[in-house]
Image (cartoon, rainbow, N blue to C red; front, side, top):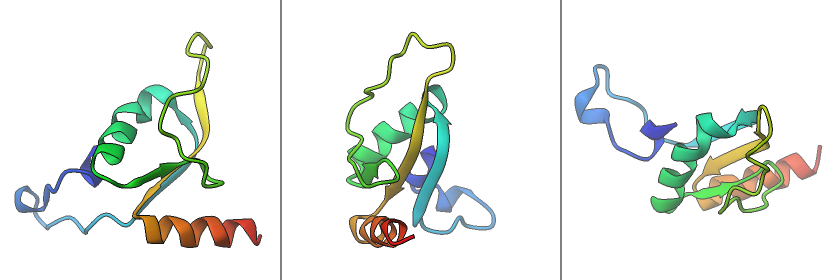
Length: 89
């Protein structure tokens, strides 16, 4: 997830594609927290799958295996399209 916020293309062969979308269901907090912070700091839209902004970790951290129900990271326009499309399903 970190590569989505930092342009690594000058250092990879072949060059990485530009970031467009990250979505995952049942993402473990410890696997995603840093990436969520980087994405938010980079100005990307960070939310759950229903479009509710995820600007803080609001899950009990004392759980054996804390997970987000879903995670969505994208540009504002892409995220809006995805949330609208998902609500129509």
